[in-house]
Length: 359
Image 1 (tube, helix red, strand yellow):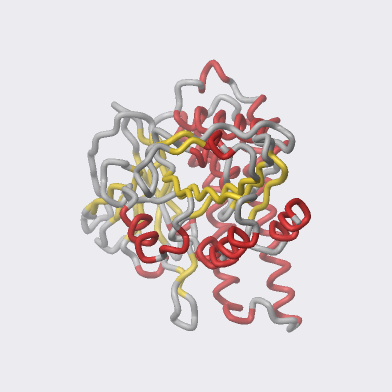
Image 2 (image 1 turned 90 degrees about the vertical axis):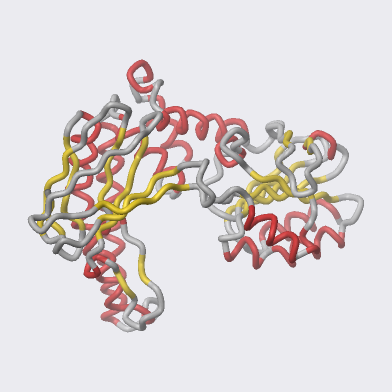
């Protein structure tokens, strides 16, 4: 039961690879007194988000162009087979409502009760300055500074939570999420992971995902032999094996059709593939939320980008295997199969390095 919903429905979302867009969504009806009930089937422990249909929690830009995503605008809880989750609280201009019913949800609630008000305050400041964010106006600079303090406070709360809840599935999920968002360094992530209670968490998918990311950090260190990529989930539907490219420099480009900087960098990648023809190979490794239809349609329309293209899937998760957090991520591999360098984001640094190596 959550007050402030005004009989407006919740919209629930969770990952489901069997669905065309890679996730399942449904509507939860809300009674006039703010009460609601919903049942669904899960095969394993899952992190679930639900968004209320109350317009005031949507952080719309003042200029009317889009909105700012904010976790404080969602209800989060952990579902598990046979579990029961209870939700209480209120909806103001953010979701001040939290789950209970078992230790993991109690832990998650303890975390989000601290974080949500701070995150909401920060995003409200962002809306206030809007298009003036980069301005040198004293008022805007002061607001940016206050936002930075709030954001750093949130990260400190998260790190402390992980340190103090070493046997909590909520902490394992949080560490995975922080790694994806690059909110912890690789060394911090490894230290946090080592401190977790493996015996209690090893059966949870959140811990398993963190373990794979930590393995990916170690495996993709500079100077190490590059992890194998061997897949039939390819654009040309032929089996691809990264080892077949030994003898040439290779750029592994982790990207997605949804990623603007990834797509905007492709013409330059094509330029360098042509510039060093015979010496350089490109391998695109795409992450997509659907079954790959958008990826294939994009490559059908952009024939210049049909170099080696592989689709990362749940059964062949190269995003986890290479511990990719930011997109695009590009990794240079030398002719012996050793990792030379890793680049996150789209800038000239990788092209300068390629010129240094290949000229």
